[in-house]
Length: 217
Ligand SMILES: [Zn+2]
Image 1: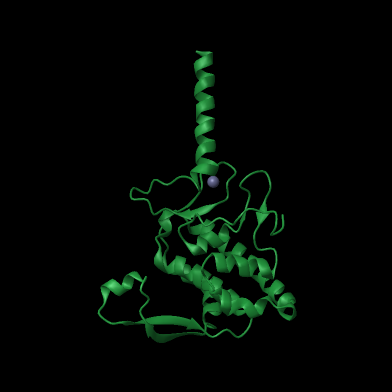
Image 2: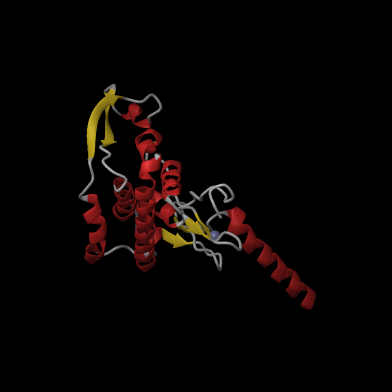
């Protein structure tokens, strides 16, 4: 499926690092890859809100295309490496020892060129209500090459590792569903990627099973 025929990517995980794992999925009978090439990668990162459209516009030019496609291939590799990490650690709290497995992320993160600027507080920024200054810190990134896109991805993954309880990371209970999410529900009771995909499917299956057993009794 190419960019014109496939549905919009899923952002159902309540965490960008996990949303990235869900950028390849099989919601129905066909597997969909949302990061097939460089343009796909830029589209996905923009939709995720991880990059600013203007910042990455130069990477869409024809002379950047092959470099950008190569970065997309690296991004898919990084995604699959991180999928294994999440798969190995989801459902339990991380242990200090796990740091050894995270070296590839720290290596990428060491290349980050993020810097701070003082800027007028944004009117719609909820932080405005919490401090008295009309100014605020804003993070900017000095973009040097398409390779920097991998740093953005590593930051989303690092944020997952550093800010959430892995015990609440879950895989959807749909029997063939591969989607991951961070369960932010109050009583930790989220079971499905979405009600419209797996939740309703499970409800329908339960309904059919009940009908069958009623017919047999
Ligand atoms: Zn599901």
